[in-house]
Length: 210
Image (cartoon, rainbow, N blue to C red; front, side):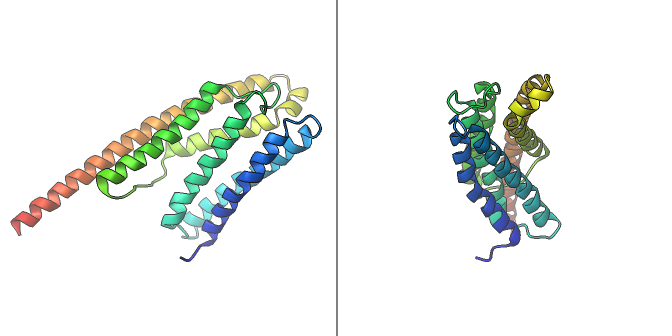
């Protein structure tokens, strides 16, 4: 199967997840906490930029493919899920900026329900309908901003005392958008299944009259 440049960028983003996780986990070691956290930050920025790049290539350069439609959200979900879990654990959280478990549950819960929705849709319609929505994009945007704000938290808070407050507000905004995206995805999924069933019924009736 021919891989487009957009596909290669997405695959590159997936491959960066492992060193990102390693750097985050290693940042818990006091000996090289700062260097590992900033390395993780650098990798995360590259992954976030690659997300925008493959989206640009797919839309503007007409390199959208079924494989890319599957891999792109998968890469985002793996990247965000790994970051959220590690940043919420007491052993690996950034000091003073531990991500609340409730926010992590909202984010991972959205992705889990989305995966279940894909499975249900596949069994009911015989295919998977993958189409980005505005709420999902907004949720991903806030998640990326949240992780970035946590990783730079200790240094920024030294110069801007309200940073911790702003980060905590961002946490809950991110959780809110994850919740909104969940409801929108469920609604869109139900609508698609209803459309498929109605369309199938119409085609069946047309065949009977032929």
